[in-house]
Amino acid sequence: MNTGTATPRADAVSVAGEPGVRRPDILQGGLQGGHHDDPRSAERRARRAIALFEAAKGAAAFAGGVGLLSLVHYDVRHLANELVGHFGWNPTSGYPAIFLHYADVLEDANLRTIMAIVAAYILIRFVEAFGLWRDRAWAEWLGAVSGGIYVPFELKHFIAHPTVINFVILAINVVVVVFLAWQLWRRRGRQDMPAAA
Image (cartoon, rainbow, N blue to C red; front, side, top):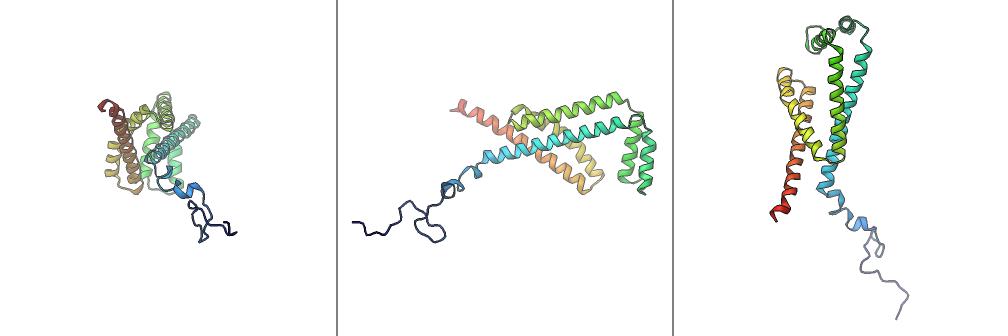
């Protein structure tokens, strides 16, 4: 017999103290143990963040290469000295000395060789970024090996010039190398699992 009053269904969930009001399925179970807590999606986001970081390094190298080409017809050593003098920097201290050193190196170097090295670096960074974005094992190898090569030099540079910027650069590269090596180790473990079963 129907008395005219609706009784809440057993599967209805109370929202804001109102019985019988159903909340969406995403609130019932989607957030607890859903895709947001999935370790693989967190790893994918981390891998894509590294891919964007590597692409940004490639883009910065490309911008530097374009800037380098624009200096071909100028006396680079003179421009560097003018810039240091304009800002009132001490030419024998820290970054101004490094800046002037590389201006001298650039003045004496073969531009074609430098541009070939810059082009190779840009290509490696963009290829690695593409592979990481697409979750390719070869890109993880490339990132781990190329990043691992830089770490000793960055560590040596940090020991010689212990600044916050140098520490951040070193720390980011160490984290990237460790993460990619861990991904390769996990990938290998997943491939070995069917063979062991």
